[in-house]
Image (cartoon, rainbow over all chains, first blue to last red; front, top):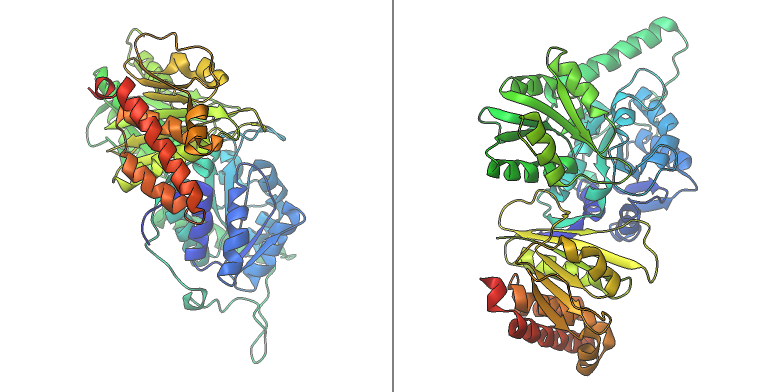
Length: 354
Length: 186
């Protein structure tokens, strides 16, 4: 397929189709409405099913059922809707169901606003729902990467039998960029799921459940889940290192579209004679903390920047230790930092007059 | 090559569409492109804008506070963005709806009565194409023939619209070249 100019949301919808997903359940909310809009036409065209549910609670439980039956399925929403899905997400993590959940973040808390934000980092990475579980969380920075990561999210969900969240912000959902789909798989060519409830004629019934009333059994289940999360940490950590092949005055640490703004700032800082680089986590859980710590050793100043009052910085600080300062620059409420703001902050850190 | 353009007007004037055409043309020319709409609490008849970035290298920020170019289809757009345009940049002013010229003296200005020109071409709705043509004529960031091809593909099912929009683009292009042309292109 040749390069097409697509909105991030449309590319996410098409990526799901190309990944062999034929079931979408969702409920409208800005700024991700172009995902259901796109799929409402595209799913029927490829023999799939698009369901606009009566609520996010319903959509997420439809996901539980479809995933339990062994189907590739996904949903998308934004902050307030994702909050409504948390119960089902916890149950799906407990029942080890492979699903993909896309969160195109807007400002909060509460109803907040519809403009871009990175306000749901902690909800995505640290839980959100109840119980001792983790989501695998992927954060794209371009429309092409959003498409690639959505396709990969389905494979990772199947591989680990775990819900995978693709965490974007309003910018990536609404922006148009050229995108190309180079991989495509048909639903009938996907690997079999022998654990799924596909009809028990001639075999022992499969059970999809998250209820373990005996302490010892639940403990064994919890440790089995923990082992899975350890395996993800060992095998799936992803990051981008930008202009870090040298020592730098300032190391930006940012994810998603904010990382792009850092790249613009890095180019501007070069004009001031300041060397800067970027460390961009692509997986937010597992967090690529060890590599970040190595990158930080070759940087004089550390600057985390987010569209939040400071969420990802908690993971950065955890891995960077308490012996050196980790600075922060955040914008919230749908306001987005200009590259020049990051330049000013960086120049202040290196002791330049601004 | 690296250019940031803000395209702004009333909702319904087609600024998002001409932004997309510009981004498509950039992509067809082998460039990196981004198109970013302002999608806040916009309302019918309210102001509307999008930002297009064209570049030979991967694009960082898809939004800007200091564009190289501005297409202003109505007065609120000129009021809001005039001061943000970089020195030596290009401002296209739709004089059909804007009763003043830019105060800036360090930018290249194309003033074109986009609505009247569009009516002469066959439809008032093509004012956006006149303005886009004027910007291309002044800045040279994309080839008008490339945009005309994309117009033909976009409106293929309605041949009458293709002719009108292509004519409007050409008229705007001629105005942009005549008023600024070589000066802005350096």
